[in-house]
Image (tube, rainbow, N blue to C red; front, side, top):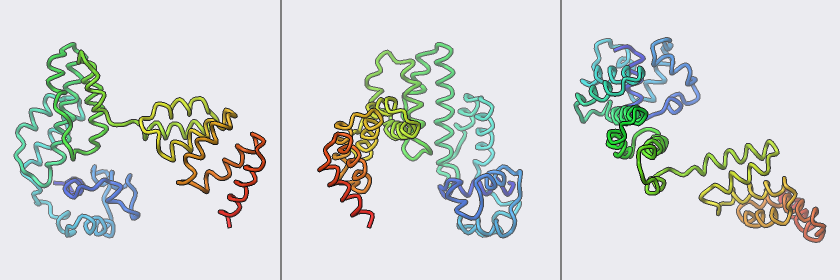
Length: 270
C-alpha cells in the first residue's frame, strides 16, 4: 500500500476530516495531494501527521504494512463509484467482511452512495418499484454528511412515491441555508428577497431570525415592523439592536425613544 493510501486509511479510521487532520500546519490541498499519491510529504510533515493520527512514522514507511483484509474490495468499490458503476460497487461491497475498524464507516458511506446512485438510475428509467425498494432504507446514523445524504434520498424517493407528505417530515431543516441566503440578500440590498427567504424558515423565534427580518423591514422603510423585530432580539443582542432601534425611532420621529437608544448605544461602546 502506498504512503498516501495509508494516510487516508488512518485518517478515516480516526474519524477525522482533512481539515481536522491538517490543523494549522499544512493545507487541505497539500494533504489531498499526499493522499492521492501526487505529492510526497517531508519528514517533518509526516511526523506531524503521524502524531495527530496516533501512529509511528514507521507505520507509513513500511511498504508491507497490511491495514485491512478489505483493502482491495474498498479500492474496487471506490473506483466503481467514481466511474458511475453503482451496481458493481454494491456487489463488491457485499463481499466486505466486518467488523473492520479501518473501513466500517467508509463502507457504510459507500453502501449509501451506491444505493442512491442505483435508485436515481432506476427512477430515470421508469423502474419505480425497484427505485422505491432501493431508497426506502434511511441513511444510518454516523455516516459522513448524513443530513445531506438523507435529503438526497428523500428527494429521490419523492419522485417515485404516490404520497409525499410523510416524506417531507423526514427532510432535514433548510433553516441554516435560508438564513445564509437571507444574509447575502441583505448585503446586496435585496430586502424583499431576504424577507421571503426568512418567511420560509421553520424556526422564526431565534434572535438571529428577528435581527435579519428587522433589517429586511428596514431596507423597505417599514420602521414600525423593523422596531418590533429588533425589540424581540433586544435582550439577546443589545449592542446590535441599540443603533438599529435608534434609527427606527428617529425615522418615526419618536425622538424621545431615539435619544434613549442613542444613550444605550453610547453606554455600550464605553
